[in-house]
Length: 195
Image (cartoon, rainbow, N blue to C red; front, side):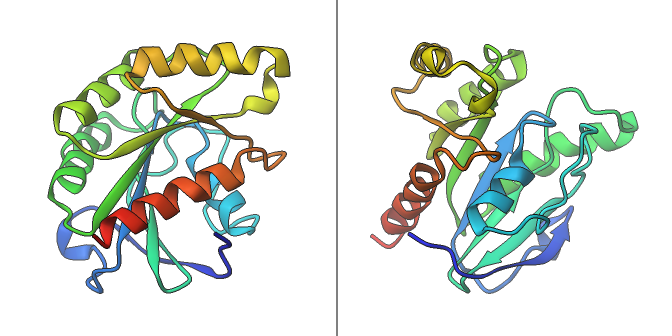
């Protein structure tokens, strides 16, 4: 799968603001600062399509990016630590949950975790919640370039065991490692949605 064109379409905080064209959607979830925006930019080959920041909590809306006029990548606000007002943080839970449970166009979810660390409580809760609601998701471990190569396999196994999955994809936005594997996950989501 090669992505040729991508564009930002809209930001939403409620369903009435979501796109209405019914293209399939692949959502990205993960803690603040795990690299969701960097993943989007790497997949579409654009440096700044999705805004990145070193400050956690910058994404405060659900952001929709239309790819090749065929599907959307959907960037959800990060969970966990975020240096934003409590009232905004409190609104994220229902907003994210409402999207993930209520969006008919949603065909798959990519749960991003930081490869440098064991999953934290929020990562585990998110994986448990996705399992509980029987939502289709895959785990991608970001920032693997920050780990010695010899530790990758052990860390991926650890992450998979903690999050209840056999497969964890290693990814680096800096080096592009794992880009083809993540694109293959997206392709699988899209293919399964057509059946």
